[in-house]
Amino acid sequence: MFDRSVLADHQSDFLSRFWQKKPLLIRNAFPGGLDYVSGDELAGLASQEGIESRLVIEHGPKAWETRHGPFEEDVWGSLPTQKWSILVQAVDRLLPEVSLLRDRFRFLPNWRVDDIMISYAVDQGGVGPHTDNYDVFLIQGQGRRRWEIGDRALVNPELEPGLDMKILKHFEAAESFVLEPGDMLYLPPGFAHNGVAQGESVTYSVGFRAPHQKEMLQSFVQFCSQFDEGEIFYTDQTLPETREPGLILPGELQRLRELMLAGLQDEKLFMRWIGGFLTEPRSFHEARDKKVSEKTLRAGLKKGRAVQRAEGARLAFYTVGEKLHFAAEGECFVLDPSLTELVALLCREQSYRAEDLLAHSEKLGFAELLCHLWNQSYVRWSDEE
Ligand code: SIN
Ligand code: CO
Image (cartoon, rainbow, N blue to C red; front, side, top):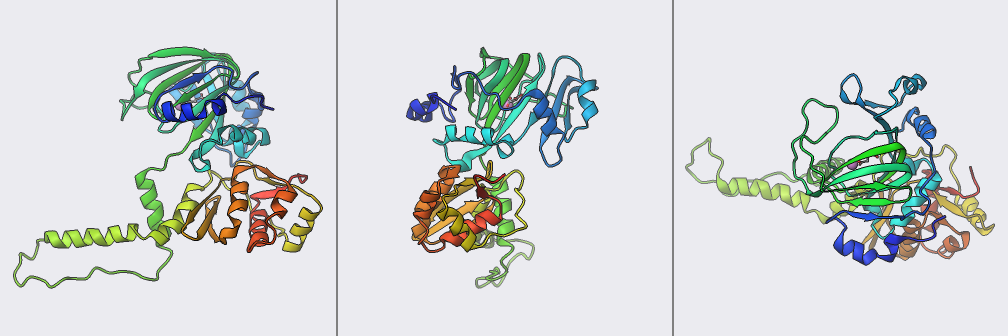
């Protein structure tokens, strides 16, 4: 499907000079462009329950009107001929070809990838000048789009007041280029950008995630609260005989803080939590009603049936000392370290040959792990619908 990868050819250069630092335009990164979804098909996805979508109309009843899906069929007929677009999130979790696009970004860790959003815009359509908090690769799928970009990352830029969207109050373009099908623009977080369709245009955004501190703290505390063992209460050191009763002493403040920090520094809990947090999906694949037995699974593999990862399923692993942690779609397991190679394969590839899986079949926990992934519908037989 892809005959070359400009990014892969220049990977180390890209990582050291551009990633998280400065924009990069790569012409013809995907020769011929990408044509996995049309505007009509995107509109179809945007009408479905459980799919995150937005419709942005520059001159709707209010400026930059934003509506959230699912949309009724009659919406599309009521739109102006210019200056609107629809954006559908996480299409990599819906369409196999879009999911495979992620292989082109394998030189970046799985856990940093968020999703592939696809937008369709009519002539002059776009979402206005804005910044994103995340790295993004904007791939021109079909049609043409003019991008104007800023020359540096902005911190808390001033926004137009009273809008549904975060439109920059002041936007000065330092550079501008028209992307043709297959061209790709990389933008680090915070760089202002404005993409305006030149005729109908389809853009694929490979977006990244970067957890932020408050969200991590919130999630970790919530995770910890499910374990009621080992509650540690504050205790006094010898109290001074005289004190101002309303005053909290500096030493007391310090010890209260230390108590909190000790909770955050609990390495065991952190390791149990972090994998689930980082692989949390945007939406969940539904678990199967019918469970598979280890016997059926092994028999299928012995017949040579290949296995495939569910589109966009988020997998990652890490090792801590002797322990292997494997995280899938927000769940985290501790596995026998002999499964490290298998787990690396599961995370790296999107489809797995039976023989490659069977090479690990005698290892402790092999069948149990695959059955669990199968039952949760994170994997399936490749020849299965
Ligand atoms: C779009 O595809 O319309 C918007 C992408 C972006 O600016 O982040
Ligand atoms: Co953007």
